[in-house]
Length: 285
Image (cartoon, rainbow, N blue to C red; front, side):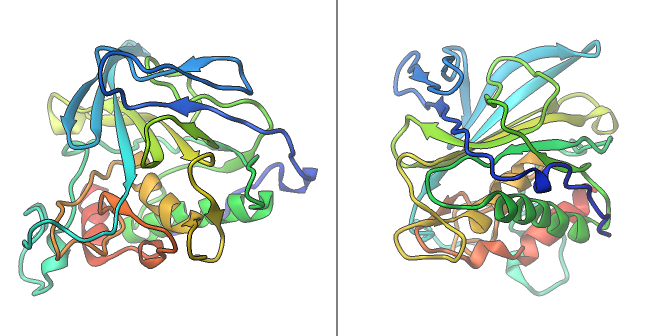
């Protein structure tokens, strides 16, 4: 079910203010990087723990009296070819006859949005993607996940020219999406999702998400151009993380699912949710 969202600042004109931020996956210790727009230094905290390949726990903070944990997903460039064959990750139901229907995982059982929170997008980028395209495409990607879930998951999206910074140590109450720089080579985008992932499943929930798309190491396209990352293809994946989805396993059955952990230049197959993506979000919501 899709709801009509109020795109509050789309008619306000072009937003030309450039936002740049850096997140780094450190090889050792801390790897700082400069956010030229805000003047802040952003890095993965030294205590961050890699809990799965390209997935980091950022530790905990307190939101409204509840202890919440931050999870950082690092989306890397790859050729979408698995190292080994396989039948998915085993999280899906049986009986469909489609092996890809089991290609999904969740951040944690029951960890989902329980209130419809708004999100903001700073569209400033150096690759010519327009404000209108970015807002509409991002909104549509949220909508596709909502249709698959048969639920309204998030609130309205809007544009901003304020500097945005992905929150790596605590929440700020804003769900932020923007272009910047990611220091670690080979990283296309990063999503940080804060929530309650332990305890009884009925008490788990998501409370915040932030996303950054690397515009320094990668060129971006609206049309799946060769040699560029397709925004819709990558955004569909990042939004999955922001609403509770984890990665698929790296198997041949799962290689074309939206939540497969790698992507490549010119790739558009993940614009549309696969059977595993649909089964996974429906099971969560």
